[in-house]
Length: 84
Image (cartoon, rainbow, N blue to C red; front, top):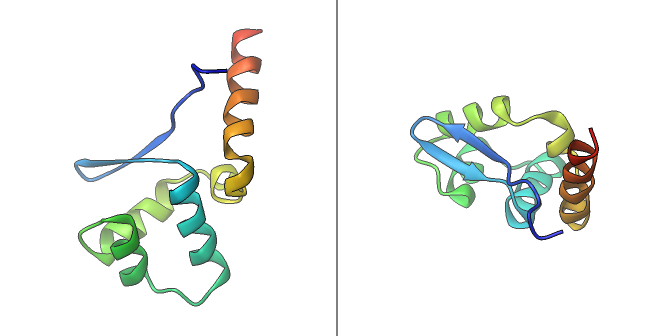
């Protein structure tokens, strides 16, 4: 499905588009002792405060979605929305 929904999380004046790369960084953050400073650096954010706001704003279902399943999850959601 080529018109799958794109998800983005707004942090300050920035908008971070959720894709496989961002999910891989988030999974690393969840599973290793990575600090917010390092997370901010990997996501291109200004400071640990922005990284903290990003973590607070991202829905948990996205946070725990494996990067390899992201494309299929978005397509499934798009199909279920169009059938309603």
